[in-house]
Image (tube, rainbow, N blue to C red):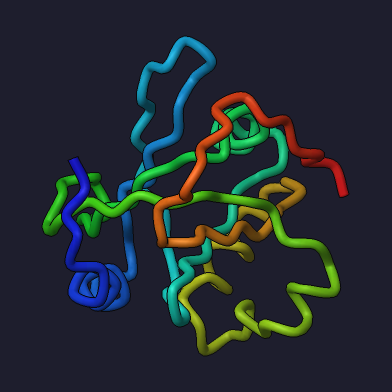
Length: 141
């Protein structure tokens, strides 16, 4: 269950730089994966390949949780809920999150060097008021 002390949780996520992102299969089964993140305001950002399991699960269920963790996935702080969505090209340019001085740049670069097509995702860290568990989003643009 997610804690309700959102400012402290955001600070924990921002300090960690790595979070355990939990996405959900159509069956409702949770799938936790460590990801590099940046926290900006009430949003966290991560990158992943467009054909990854995370991207496919988010396309079917935008509800996620994040918890600060080690690079091996050992949780180091409280979990916070949110809603994930892929960012469009214009939004990515505006945010300027993939600069060499930011943590996501290296994660993005390593995947690109492996020939993967990457997408930047935004997680709104305020739990949604009405969750639509199977709302499909277009993950191709």
